[in-house]
Image 1 (tube, helix red, strand yellow):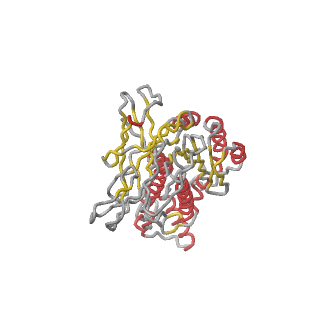
Image 2: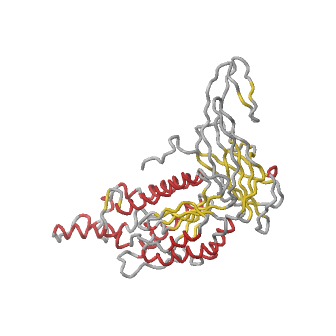
Image 3: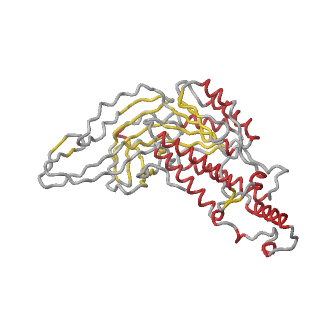
Length: 430
């Protein structure tokens, strides 16, 4: 059975402390009991861990009548007790099993939690990375957003929009569709064309402007994931609109053009040792170490962002407005095989973001309506399971989970792992 990653998990580290003989302890039901004299008391401060689950029958139809006792959740092979169960059906929320209050810590008095009055079952966040959308993609991007307004957003859905570049928009979560309609006309791509990449300055990590733009995009997306951690019991779908990432594109053409500029500056027409290295006159051994490890750096950025999305229970649906990509423009001075490699890497980066967070990647295709309808179906019907982790190892950041059901003939799709946040809750410096 194919398992699709689809739910977020928020968990805090376990705090162990030795208490005095007169200290009090709690059992699972929250009842305070007195420990035996001389026996150490271990206290655990944990948060509710939530994960999204999609259950379908053999015909692919969503099963909307699964009860809590028909689910089984395992974390690192250890069975967990389900504390909450919320059904989202047709985009509306039905609280089937309310979560109990978290274990109370000694000396802390918390007010009773207020019930949520917001009945919206879906939250969409449109992330437009216009720093990685060329100007020629602007018209198609706006058209795709108009299609999503018609076929994806329904009455009662909340949505927000954030851009990374000159479109300069940051729309807080709202129900007002007019706000999005006005924002669509302002979306403008400002990505770099191959000729721009070839002509820009080269730094120790490759094209400096290219790396800077990627840093802005990933940092903005990472902060959004941290903010989404504050929203619970909802599946947060992030529509990630971008043309993808490649930290070291057109390497041979870039080095060739750089050498030609250096040769023109020196005014010396004699052959250098580098010209005898390969047909293009490029000595690859002279390349920077940063460029050599560009693919590793990109994989690290993608991994960090997907871990943040999983902690926030956010599913990334990546969308490439380029659609079905053919050859490069005739005025672009790059080799055909370099162009093919560039397209493949950028598309694979979008596939990684989607697959590692339980979403789908809409890349290398022109049927956007079909993809939008699939996103609509996946975000309309699902369960949200919650449990308090009993994992005894607070230092184990990466944890595997498995969700099963006793219902015969039912297939379960759920997230397969999650990671605890860094102790400082900040993204490590790159």
